[in-house]
Image (spheres, rainbow, N blue to C red):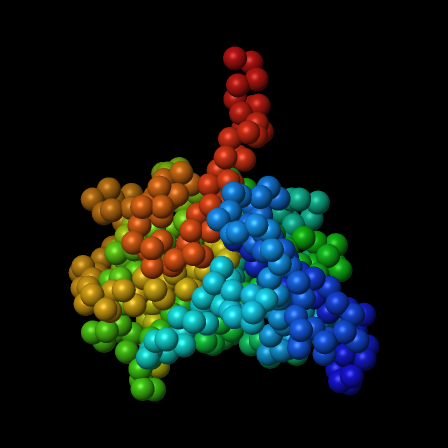
Length: 416
């Protein structure tokens, strides 16, 4: 057995289901060679569990098994354990068409364009379910209690080839952000999953919880997952050239349908509605208007200031950390490529604050509204079976939520 694996107690082979939950099967290091050759059987229905662990009605025939094969390039080691992200195949050895990771790979292999992508990952560090202190954006005291924890997360990532461009204290109390180096979309999605796992394990070691809810607390900033995206052709960055702007137009055209994939949980819409407080809560800056602008944080797509041609990019500001990153990236790319193939043209850029400006069209601001937009969309058709299965899971999640009595209802209606 490879020397790397001798001190490991077990290896987890991970995948992400349609509910955005990271699931895995653990194997003994001594079994890895066999698993690489033969895979691990997983019930196909496992992809269709909601975040509440209920199973959505599925069109998959029966409840057959599919085979999960670890991607050796995703190997990540932390202490005495390792993570490998898997791909699903049928028993006949074909890529499973319900696997968003396989679909992302297929789309990338079929296009003549190349993409460089990276995530800005926001999250909270909690103690006993509560935020720590009252530090605000960039404030030094926000680091006092967690500096070793953050340094260890960064160290584990670096030792596994994941480069952190910067990490900052974000605007919410005990909220932080890690920005990762641009990579190809498949690796970007993998690194987000690895980041979530590593940060959760390291945080528990220090007595904290790494929390990736879009809106864990009503009065302070929610957590986003901004996607930085550039388009390349024949070694040249064409993001702000004609084809790149066609791509941008496609994303704006499909923005309402993209919302369910970018903001896939009921809690996501608490983040998207934060602007309605009419009081600028520091750090909310969550755009909902279907526009783009140069360095405009109130637009769903911002074109940041670039120091060079190679740094030109789009920043898609709608997503949050509850996404399935493979599904998000494949949907974003398909939307953009549809814009190129149909030679769509974007509207003029908007460079002023439009948070409270009703003259611009908005993405859906409710989970139900986002479901309706996605269900009737061309984007769902373009996504094929992964789009249908995702919709099925999200419908089940909505149905489950209608059976729950929330703390808000108890507080408001208790004395009625």
